[in-house]
Length: 189
Length: 196
Image 1: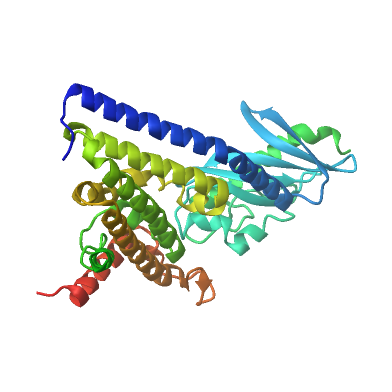
Image 2: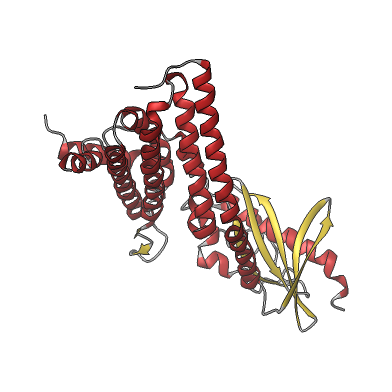
């Protein structure tokens, strides 16, 4: 049944298989590239929309704070800046924890949302589903409250049994606040 | 035809990949944190299994013995990548939960196992039925395992929370619970179906 295993046959069959498979994948990549990009853009826009008040225009910029570069979307409504959506990444319990933090020009957190995480399902992963944990970020004013978990003497309610994730989350929000402080100096006062 | 039908039911019970053959344990333990995750992982594997079985049964006669494993792996990897691209494009939410485990289907012993044990010595239709049967068996097992773990660990079923809160037994959502549930389900399965 199977063809003879001489060099010519082996090279021919393996080569042909690889060629054919690459062709199929190349085609599939070209076909799916557009929807994949569209899905990524839709996801980012949804994340910005979820963490900032209504806006009609965004511009993508970046700022460097303490040697770390933060990318952020500056959102404006009718020419007036309504807030900054900062992409903030830290190391969580299970891997990188990436957030979108919306901050209004006066430095108050408008809302946050999780872009991606690798936390333990059922524990740290609740940082993107636990209503109580998520709700506390809306309107969090770093000028009046302390940005660290209650265990460390701050004002952030941690997720039960997930202190490390909660700490990381808080750290990400904190660095986003710092980043906005360094860019937003001209917008108020 | 009845022979092909038997191939499908064999995959469900006699050759059940999870509870009888004990193949593909890595995705089984890792992705079944909820019923929906188990179901999606099962369906993703089903897709790859049927297509790779069909293609391998077609090309088997011309593939020299010494290179048959690399050739099969290339075929399987192609389908997995295809699936990955399609999921990324059309079901981004599902891709986000399963993304990490999709590439692992390539090394899932079920897929290569069925290619080696069945598809390379049988016809196209029989291989497709075998892939379908084993794939459905795998999907059902993963869904049941996911459902049990979700009920115990999160107090919900298919995302519907029936205890009103987050007070499930967390251990069952984590790795130790996966082993425990799998073990007990295996006992139950063998008690019900093994005739000897």
